[in-house]
Length: 355
Image (cartoon, rainbow, N blue to C red; front, side, top):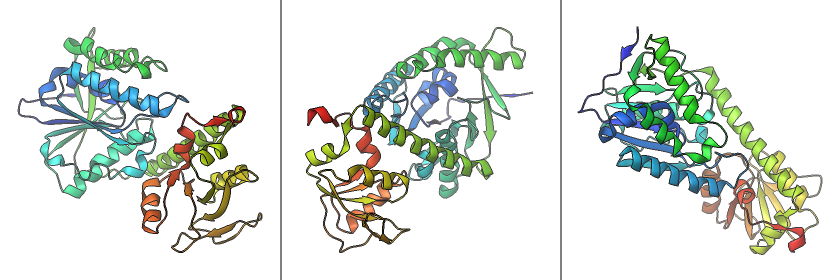
Protein backbone atom coordinates (compact mmCIF):
# COMPACT_ATOMS: atom_id res chain seq x y z
CA UNK A 1 0.00 0.00 0.00
CA UNK A 2 1.41 3.40 -0.98
CA UNK A 3 1.96 6.09 1.59
CA UNK A 4 0.16 9.41 1.18
CA UNK A 5 2.62 12.21 0.47
CA UNK A 6 2.34 14.52 3.45
CA UNK A 7 3.03 18.18 2.75
CA UNK A 8 3.17 20.54 5.72
CA UNK A 9 2.89 24.31 5.78
CA UNK A 10 6.39 24.57 7.22
CA UNK A 11 7.87 22.52 4.36
CA UNK A 12 10.25 24.18 1.93
CA UNK A 13 10.00 22.34 -1.36
CA UNK A 14 12.47 22.42 -4.25
CA UNK A 15 11.44 20.90 -7.58
CA UNK A 16 14.45 20.23 -9.80
CA UNK A 17 13.69 19.87 -13.51
CA UNK A 18 16.14 18.99 -16.29
CA UNK A 19 14.11 20.99 -18.84
CA UNK A 20 11.36 23.60 -18.61
CA UNK A 21 8.08 21.60 -18.56
CA UNK A 22 9.38 18.52 -16.70
CA UNK A 23 8.39 20.13 -13.40
CA UNK A 24 4.71 20.44 -14.36
CA UNK A 25 4.47 17.11 -16.19
CA UNK A 26 5.88 15.13 -13.27
CA UNK A 27 5.13 17.32 -10.26
CA UNK A 28 2.49 19.77 -11.47
CA UNK A 29 0.11 18.56 -8.80
CA UNK A 30 2.47 19.77 -6.10
CA UNK A 31 2.89 23.13 -7.83
CA UNK A 32 -0.87 23.47 -8.04
CA UNK A 33 -1.53 22.38 -4.45
CA UNK A 34 1.05 24.46 -2.60
CA UNK A 35 2.73 27.12 -4.75
CA UNK A 36 3.54 29.30 -1.74
CA UNK A 37 6.11 26.82 -0.37
CA UNK A 38 7.56 25.66 -3.71
CA UNK A 39 10.65 26.75 -5.58
CA UNK A 40 11.56 25.48 -9.05
CA UNK A 41 15.04 25.12 -10.49
CA UNK A 42 15.42 24.17 -14.18
CA UNK A 43 18.91 22.98 -15.02
CA UNK A 44 19.13 23.39 -18.83
CA UNK A 45 18.13 25.99 -21.40
CA UNK A 46 15.84 23.62 -23.35
CA UNK A 47 17.35 24.58 -26.71
CA UNK A 48 17.05 21.07 -28.18
CA UNK A 49 13.34 20.85 -27.49
CA UNK A 50 12.08 20.98 -31.06
CA UNK A 51 14.16 18.84 -33.41
CA UNK A 52 16.04 20.81 -36.03
CA UNK A 53 14.50 24.22 -35.31
CA UNK A 54 16.88 27.10 -34.58
CA UNK A 55 18.16 26.31 -31.04
CA UNK A 56 18.43 29.97 -30.07
CA UNK A 57 14.80 30.59 -31.05
CA UNK A 58 13.66 27.52 -29.11
CA UNK A 59 15.75 28.56 -26.10
CA UNK A 60 14.02 31.95 -25.96
CA UNK A 61 10.57 30.40 -26.47
CA UNK A 62 11.11 27.96 -23.63
CA UNK A 63 12.33 30.67 -21.28
CA UNK A 64 9.16 32.65 -21.99
CA UNK A 65 6.91 29.60 -21.62
CA UNK A 66 8.51 28.69 -18.30
CA UNK A 67 8.14 32.22 -16.95
CA UNK A 68 4.47 32.30 -17.99
CA UNK A 69 3.85 28.94 -16.33
CA UNK A 70 5.47 30.08 -13.07
CA UNK A 71 3.43 33.28 -13.05
CA UNK A 72 0.21 31.35 -13.60
CA UNK A 73 1.12 28.83 -10.90
CA UNK A 74 1.90 31.59 -8.40
CA UNK A 75 5.52 30.48 -7.96
CA UNK A 76 7.64 33.46 -6.96
CA UNK A 77 11.00 31.72 -6.62
CA UNK A 78 12.15 30.04 -9.80
CA UNK A 79 15.20 30.09 -12.02
CA UNK A 80 16.88 28.45 -14.99
CA UNK A 81 20.56 27.60 -14.51
CA UNK A 82 21.01 27.63 -18.29
CA UNK A 83 23.23 24.61 -18.90
CA UNK A 84 23.11 23.56 -22.51
CA UNK A 85 20.26 21.18 -23.23
CA UNK A 86 21.55 17.69 -23.99
CA UNK A 87 24.86 18.05 -22.13
CA UNK A 88 23.84 17.72 -18.48
CA UNK A 89 25.83 14.51 -18.03
CA UNK A 90 29.00 16.60 -18.14
CA UNK A 91 27.61 19.03 -15.54
CA UNK A 92 26.53 16.77 -12.69
CA UNK A 93 28.23 19.23 -10.34
CA UNK A 94 25.72 21.93 -11.33
CA UNK A 95 23.99 21.97 -7.92
CA UNK A 96 27.04 21.78 -5.71
CA UNK A 97 27.08 25.57 -5.21
CA UNK A 98 23.34 25.72 -4.49
CA UNK A 99 22.49 25.61 -0.79
CA UNK A 100 20.22 22.57 -0.59
CA UNK A 101 20.04 22.77 3.20
CA UNK A 102 17.29 25.37 2.71
CA UNK A 103 14.79 22.67 1.74
CA UNK A 104 12.90 19.95 3.58
CA UNK A 105 11.77 18.14 0.43
CA UNK A 106 13.45 17.91 -2.97
CA UNK A 107 11.70 16.45 -6.04
CA UNK A 108 13.69 15.43 -9.11
CA UNK A 109 13.34 13.18 -12.16
CA UNK A 110 14.03 9.48 -11.76
CA UNK A 111 17.34 7.93 -12.70
CA UNK A 112 15.66 5.69 -15.29
CA UNK A 113 13.35 8.29 -16.82
CA UNK A 114 14.35 7.67 -20.43
CA UNK A 115 16.49 10.76 -21.09
CA UNK A 116 20.19 11.28 -20.21
CA UNK A 117 19.51 14.78 -18.87
CA UNK A 118 16.88 13.34 -16.53
CA UNK A 119 19.37 10.80 -15.22
CA UNK A 120 21.96 13.56 -14.82
CA UNK A 121 19.51 15.74 -12.87
CA UNK A 122 18.97 12.94 -10.37
CA UNK A 123 22.71 12.32 -10.07
CA UNK A 124 23.27 16.07 -9.60
CA UNK A 125 20.94 16.25 -6.60
CA UNK A 126 22.57 13.33 -4.81
CA UNK A 127 26.07 14.50 -5.70
CA UNK A 128 25.35 17.94 -4.24
CA UNK A 129 23.76 16.50 -1.09
CA UNK A 130 26.75 14.26 -0.49
CA UNK A 131 29.22 17.10 -1.04
CA UNK A 132 27.27 19.43 1.27
CA UNK A 133 26.85 16.59 3.80
CA UNK A 134 23.09 17.10 3.98
CA UNK A 135 21.09 14.19 5.37
CA UNK A 136 17.96 15.76 6.88
CA UNK A 137 16.05 16.28 3.64
CA UNK A 138 13.48 14.03 1.96
CA UNK A 139 14.18 13.14 -1.68
CA UNK A 140 11.36 12.14 -4.02
CA UNK A 141 11.70 11.05 -7.64
CA UNK A 142 8.93 11.92 -10.09
CA UNK A 143 8.10 10.43 -13.49
CA UNK A 144 8.03 12.18 -16.86
CA UNK A 145 8.98 9.96 -19.80
CA UNK A 146 9.01 6.56 -18.10
CA UNK A 147 6.96 5.15 -15.20
CA UNK A 148 8.86 4.86 -11.94
CA UNK A 149 9.97 1.30 -11.26
CA UNK A 150 9.28 1.40 -7.55
CA UNK A 151 6.62 3.74 -6.17
CA UNK A 152 6.44 4.60 -2.46
CA UNK A 153 4.17 7.65 -2.20
CA UNK A 154 1.15 9.14 -3.92
CA UNK A 155 -0.74 12.44 -3.94
CA UNK A 156 -4.39 12.72 -4.96
CA UNK A 157 -4.44 15.67 -7.39
CA UNK A 158 -8.05 15.32 -8.56
CA UNK A 159 -8.99 18.78 -7.29
CA UNK A 160 -6.09 20.42 -9.15
CA UNK A 161 -5.78 18.25 -12.28
CA UNK A 162 -7.20 21.01 -14.49
CA UNK A 163 -4.64 23.47 -13.14
CA UNK A 164 -1.83 20.99 -13.71
CA UNK A 165 -2.88 20.52 -17.33
CA UNK A 166 -3.08 24.30 -17.83
CA UNK A 167 0.50 24.61 -16.59
CA UNK A 168 1.67 21.99 -19.08
CA UNK A 169 -0.14 23.80 -21.90
CA UNK A 170 2.00 26.89 -21.41
CA UNK A 171 4.74 24.87 -23.12
CA UNK A 172 3.27 25.03 -26.60
CA UNK A 173 6.65 24.51 -28.28
CA UNK A 174 6.75 21.02 -26.76
CA UNK A 175 3.15 20.07 -27.49
CA UNK A 176 3.93 20.20 -31.21
CA UNK A 177 5.85 16.93 -30.91
CA UNK A 178 3.76 15.14 -28.28
CA UNK A 179 0.53 15.92 -26.38
CA UNK A 180 2.22 15.94 -22.97
CA UNK A 181 -0.93 17.28 -21.36
CA UNK A 182 -2.92 14.25 -22.48
CA UNK A 183 -0.08 11.90 -21.54
CA UNK A 184 0.10 13.40 -18.05
CA UNK A 185 -3.68 13.21 -17.63
CA UNK A 186 -3.72 9.56 -18.74
CA UNK A 187 -0.82 8.65 -16.44
CA UNK A 188 -2.53 10.33 -13.46
CA UNK A 189 -5.76 8.42 -14.15
CA UNK A 190 -3.82 5.16 -14.55
CA UNK A 191 -1.96 5.67 -11.28
CA UNK A 192 -5.29 6.32 -9.54
CA UNK A 193 -6.78 3.12 -10.92
CA UNK A 194 -3.74 1.19 -9.73
CA UNK A 195 -4.67 2.33 -6.25
CA UNK A 196 -8.39 1.61 -6.71
CA UNK A 197 -9.31 5.28 -6.88
CA UNK A 198 -11.79 5.17 -9.74
CA UNK A 199 -12.49 8.48 -11.42
CA UNK A 200 -9.65 10.28 -9.68
CA UNK A 201 -6.14 11.47 -10.56
CA UNK A 202 -2.93 10.69 -8.72
CA UNK A 203 0.74 11.65 -8.92
CA UNK A 204 3.24 9.10 -7.63
CA UNK A 205 6.78 9.40 -6.33
CA UNK A 206 9.67 7.29 -5.10
CA UNK A 207 11.20 8.21 -1.76
CA UNK A 208 14.98 8.01 -1.50
CA UNK A 209 17.21 8.59 1.47
CA UNK A 210 19.94 11.17 0.79
CA UNK A 211 22.42 8.61 2.14
CA UNK A 212 21.44 6.20 -0.64
CA UNK A 213 23.96 5.46 -3.37
CA UNK A 214 23.06 5.95 -7.02
CA UNK A 215 25.74 3.60 -8.28
CA UNK A 216 24.27 2.01 -11.38
CA UNK A 217 26.08 0.57 -14.42
CA UNK A 218 23.52 2.16 -16.73
CA UNK A 219 24.65 5.70 -15.84
CA UNK A 220 27.83 5.24 -17.85
CA UNK A 221 25.74 3.98 -20.75
CA UNK A 222 23.47 7.04 -20.46
CA UNK A 223 26.55 9.25 -20.73
CA UNK A 224 27.69 7.48 -23.88
CA UNK A 225 24.17 7.67 -25.32
CA UNK A 226 24.05 11.41 -24.72
CA UNK A 227 27.43 11.90 -26.37
CA UNK A 228 26.37 9.79 -29.36
CA UNK A 229 23.10 11.71 -29.69
CA UNK A 230 24.94 15.04 -29.67
CA UNK A 231 27.46 13.74 -32.23
CA UNK A 232 24.59 12.60 -34.46
CA UNK A 233 22.91 16.03 -34.19
CA UNK A 234 26.13 17.78 -35.25
CA UNK A 235 26.57 15.58 -38.30
CA UNK A 236 22.89 15.89 -39.25
CA UNK A 237 22.90 19.68 -38.90
CA UNK A 238 26.14 19.89 -40.88
CA UNK A 239 24.67 17.80 -43.69
CA UNK A 240 21.55 19.97 -43.79
CA UNK A 241 23.66 23.10 -44.19
CA UNK A 242 25.66 21.51 -46.99
CA UNK A 243 22.49 20.48 -48.81
CA UNK A 244 21.20 24.06 -48.50
CA UNK A 245 24.61 25.27 -49.73
CA UNK A 246 25.44 27.26 -46.63
CA UNK A 247 29.15 28.00 -46.41
CA UNK A 248 31.16 27.54 -43.21
CA UNK A 249 34.24 29.04 -44.86
CA UNK A 250 32.33 32.16 -45.90
CA UNK A 251 30.96 32.59 -42.38
CA UNK A 252 34.46 32.38 -40.89
CA UNK A 253 35.91 34.73 -43.51
CA UNK A 254 33.15 37.28 -42.85
CA UNK A 255 34.13 37.30 -39.17
CA UNK A 256 37.76 37.90 -40.14
CA UNK A 257 38.89 34.37 -39.32
CA UNK A 258 41.01 33.50 -42.34
CA UNK A 259 43.77 31.68 -40.47
CA UNK A 260 42.47 29.22 -37.92
CA UNK A 261 43.49 26.30 -35.74
CA UNK A 262 41.24 23.32 -35.17
CA UNK A 263 41.04 21.84 -31.67
CA UNK A 264 40.32 18.10 -31.68
CA UNK A 265 41.27 15.67 -34.43
CA UNK A 266 38.67 12.95 -34.09
CA UNK A 267 35.98 12.44 -36.75
CA UNK A 268 34.52 15.98 -36.66
CA UNK A 269 37.93 17.66 -36.64
CA UNK A 270 39.11 15.65 -39.63
CA UNK A 271 35.93 16.39 -41.59
CA UNK A 272 36.18 20.10 -40.85
CA UNK A 273 39.79 20.25 -42.07
CA UNK A 274 38.76 18.45 -45.27
CA UNK A 275 35.84 20.83 -45.88
CA UNK A 276 38.03 23.92 -45.49
CA UNK A 277 40.77 22.55 -47.76
CA UNK A 278 41.06 24.77 -50.84
CA UNK A 279 38.83 27.53 -49.43
CA UNK A 280 39.70 31.07 -48.36
CA UNK A 281 40.09 29.83 -44.77
CA UNK A 282 43.48 28.30 -44.04
CA UNK A 283 43.83 25.68 -41.30
CA UNK A 284 47.30 26.44 -39.95
CA UNK A 285 47.46 23.50 -37.55
CA UNK A 286 45.47 21.18 -35.30
CA UNK A 287 45.63 20.82 -31.52
CA UNK A 288 44.87 17.47 -29.92
CA UNK A 289 45.91 16.14 -26.52
CA UNK A 290 46.13 12.57 -27.79
CA UNK A 291 48.02 13.20 -31.03
CA UNK A 292 51.24 15.02 -31.90
CA UNK A 293 52.37 14.46 -35.46
CA UNK A 294 51.71 15.48 -39.06
CA UNK A 295 48.68 14.08 -40.88
CA UNK A 296 48.57 12.73 -44.44
CA UNK A 297 47.84 16.19 -45.85
CA UNK A 298 50.94 17.64 -44.20
CA UNK A 299 48.88 19.43 -41.52
CA UNK A 300 50.86 19.78 -38.27
CA UNK A 301 49.18 18.42 -35.14
CA UNK A 302 50.34 19.69 -31.75
CA UNK A 303 49.54 19.06 -28.14
CA UNK A 304 47.87 22.29 -26.84
CA UNK A 305 50.66 24.56 -25.63
CA UNK A 306 51.91 28.12 -25.51
CA UNK A 307 54.15 29.43 -28.27
CA UNK A 308 52.31 28.00 -31.28
CA UNK A 309 51.80 30.33 -34.28
CA UNK A 310 49.12 32.96 -33.77
CA UNK A 311 45.80 32.40 -35.56
CA UNK A 312 42.62 34.42 -36.00
CA UNK A 313 40.47 31.86 -34.20
CA UNK A 314 40.42 28.37 -32.74
CA UNK A 315 37.49 26.14 -33.71
CA UNK A 316 36.79 23.57 -30.99
CA UNK A 317 35.29 20.39 -32.44
CA UNK A 318 35.11 18.42 -29.19
CA UNK A 319 31.51 17.40 -28.44
CA UNK A 320 31.87 17.94 -24.69
CA UNK A 321 33.68 20.24 -22.24
CA UNK A 322 33.85 23.41 -24.34
CA UNK A 323 33.92 25.66 -21.27
CA UNK A 324 36.92 23.84 -19.83
CA UNK A 325 38.73 23.82 -23.19
CA UNK A 326 38.02 27.51 -23.71
CA UNK A 327 39.43 28.35 -20.28
CA UNK A 328 42.58 26.31 -20.97
CA UNK A 329 43.17 27.97 -24.34
CA UNK A 330 42.57 31.47 -22.98
CA UNK A 331 45.18 30.80 -20.30
CA UNK A 332 47.60 29.81 -23.07
CA UNK A 333 47.02 33.13 -24.83
CA UNK A 334 44.59 32.16 -27.59
CA UNK A 335 41.74 34.44 -28.64
CA UNK A 336 38.41 33.97 -30.47
CA UNK A 337 37.74 30.42 -29.31
CA UNK A 338 34.60 29.13 -31.03
CA UNK A 339 32.54 26.00 -30.46
CA UNK A 340 31.94 24.20 -33.75
CA UNK A 341 28.51 23.20 -32.50
CA UNK A 342 27.63 26.86 -31.85
CA UNK A 343 28.83 27.70 -35.34
CA UNK A 344 26.41 25.14 -36.78
CA UNK A 345 23.56 26.47 -34.66
CA UNK A 346 23.85 29.96 -36.11
CA UNK A 347 21.07 30.62 -38.58
CA UNK A 348 22.91 33.39 -40.45
CA UNK A 349 25.42 31.29 -42.38
CA UNK A 350 25.69 32.46 -46.00
CA UNK A 351 24.72 30.37 -48.99
CA UNK A 352 27.13 30.08 -51.89
CA UNK A 353 24.79 32.10 -54.11
CA UNK A 354 25.07 34.98 -51.62
CA UNK A 355 28.84 35.23 -51.91
